[in-house]
Length: 368
Image 1 (cartoon, one colour):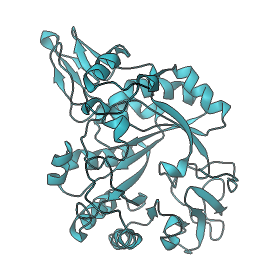
Image 2 (cartoon, rainbow, N blue to C red):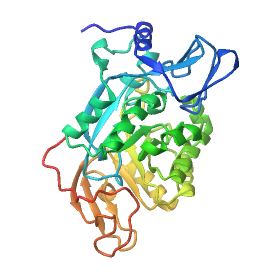
Image 3 (cartoon, rainbow, N blue to C red):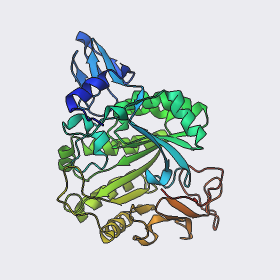
């Protein structure tokens, strides 16, 4: 199977575009894209930071009509712990990102257009329609459709088309994102976006500048999405020697708690990948220390993820009133569930914030 260079990949992706909706026309045939917080102002022929959105004769052309993969995933893999727990989601993705994280865990798709040695085959660009994506979800009994694998904001026009149809069919929808969004973009998506998982990657502006973003914009996205009524969970990949200092973890957890102490915070383990091969993997003890900081900062729902069976009770959801476990997990599997259909603790009746399914999930009989 042949691979293709970054240059020819971008040219091929240009053929898989339509005129977008997440932009404003300006004078001189310029356009302002508001899909993400870069808000690129582009002259004809110019590309955005993401390289997959570009100005063609005064209109913004955006990715459309393909996926690099669709998969059935447990919702806990995203990770979401308070959004339809125990259910399946249909995940789909495209190519590209508006950040350049050296530790990217999905770099083959997210950084494909930035890497001349990217191993992306043209066979991975599979033509598909929104109706086919939604039909696949229904056929496989998924409860939600999730845009993931690359950065959803830069392909927001495509996901909005899918989500609009999905909502009409009774499905939930979500983004797995870096949170580098705009109010206008969130306002546009709100009618068809139920959940947002935000990677809050670090706690300082200097670290965010290394990634090509701004901390303040990500914090603002978390706050504004919650204000709109979108369910939000936050994830921090704890990277030894980069963002794992107590000061930085305190800064991250205090930022989340200042928005809402009910926001679930997942601390997850890094493994060496992409351009950050010299850092060691995250140990269970490091995740436990980060979790303790989050709890001390006032966060009620703190989880340590992707090291199944090695982080004690931090995979589980506990009732903050009676302290009993209301959802018990191991990895991506829900083994015990003690919430009412409207999300109250079965033991004491305390409401647990989240998006709950009226159908009580059963333990999965298969592994992922």
